[in-house]
Every structure is written in structure tokens, then in C-alpha cells.
Length: 302
Ligand SMILES: [Mn+2]
Image (tube, rainbow, N blue to C red; front, side, top):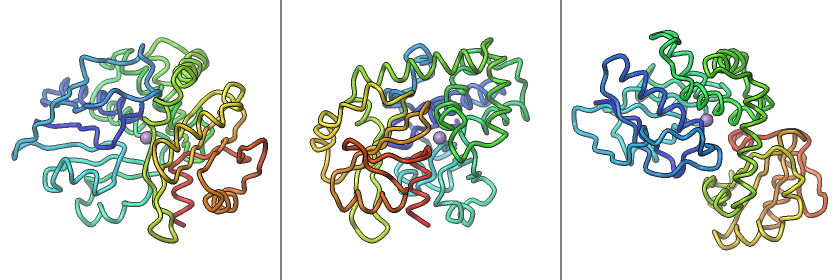
């Protein structure tokens, strides 16, 4: 049996789509594979795209089983689920642990600079199987993952491979990139605005400041524009204050190509203003380009 577990504390559309597509691919090729998706996916997976029949909530790794880890390479998080010798593959695009895994499992770790893990999975489907055997439902999920993780192809980590995969996926899904993009981001924005608290809490990561032991909660939301969120400073502050001590909220506004940022303390504000060259406006810190969380963390590590 091959397991494909969600290893992080939440499931976004990249991990959700990639795990399900890979499990489908393996099963079609005669290898028994099961997902492990114990949490409801976050706001980035619209209800219409969910595939509940693939959301297996039981994880039961036996000594002879193997596991494929997608969209995460944090060793501590992975070790809680799978011992190293049972890892069949790690495919990720978060920087930081490339060398660690290279020395431990060699070529079985593919951690590369690419917009979405969904792109890698899509390419692998074509290399070892047949695109005519991919369902429109799976194609829509993978396409949504590429749009979300590349911020509609605006993020720095976007590659030509992501563009290629997206146009092929749109054909399989019997839609166009333009139509699907409109539908996808308006659906996601609606979900976020209808329950801001849930959206924020379900996309948090604990991050440690480079200078020391200080950690903070890093929340990220992706919406189409800032119009409906710009006056919600008090609400967001309250939600985050109730959730932890130090925090950083990054709201990516795709159509404006910038991040709207709120932080818990002047100290954190000073640090990030310098790091990301932010300007201050009406209570927000605003960037002059789009930053993904993984890009901000990569800058912190430099
Ligand atoms: Mn991803």
C-alpha cells in the first residue's frame, strides 16, 4: 500500500489536488494507493471542486507500506507520520530542506523551484501514463492549485512549466484559463469574506525570526482585490490577537499585484518593512509586488 498523507496542519488546494491526483494515477496503474486527508481543506478549495470520495480520514501505515509526501519537506512534520525508510518520494517546492533530504533519501526527494507541486504531478501523469485518462474533475483541481500557488502566474516562483501545465489542464477540464480564473478567484474571495476568522485560522504557519527564538503566527489569504477587506483591520486584529501572541497577516491582492500586511507589534513591523520594502497606508503595510509566504520566508533565511 502507498499512502499519500496531508502532513501539515491544514490542506490548501495544492496539497489537496496533488495528493488526490497522484492517488488516482497510482490506482489507475494498478498500485493500491490511499490518501490521508483528516482535515477539511481550507478556503482555497471551493466546495464545487471537492472530491469527498477521495478524502480518506484514516491513516494506518504498516511496516511494509510506503508513503509519498507532497507539498511539504519539513523533516519534523514528516517524521510524525512516516519514518525515513518508508518514504517512497518527496515532491515539494518550499525552500530550506533540499540538502537535508538529498543526503537522506537522494533522488527520491524532488524539491525544486516551481509554481505548484500540482504542475509536477501533472507532468508525471503524462510521463508515466496517459492524459486521456485524467478526469475533468481532477484537471480542475490541479488547475486551481496552479492558479492559487502562482497567484495567477504573478508570483516570482512561476515557471514556464506552470503555464504549459495550466493550458493543457484547461483543455482536459473543458474550459479556458480565463473563464476558470474568473470563476476560481471570485469563489475563493467569497468564501474568505463570508468567514474571515475561519479563513485566517486555517492558513497559519509558525515561523521563527532569524535573529533568535522569537516565533510568530504567519497567516496568509489570497483574494482578488482589497476593496472588501480594507476596512476590516479591527476584525482581523481581534481574530489574530485571540489566536496567539505574535502574528503577521499577509493578504495577497492579485488584481492589484501587492500584499496588504498587518502585524502584532512595532518590532515585527520594523523588521518586515525593511525586509520587504513596505510602505504604510491607512493602518496597513503595503508591498510594491506580490509575495507568497514561502517567498517571504526564503527572504528571511537569506
Ligand atoms: Mn504548494
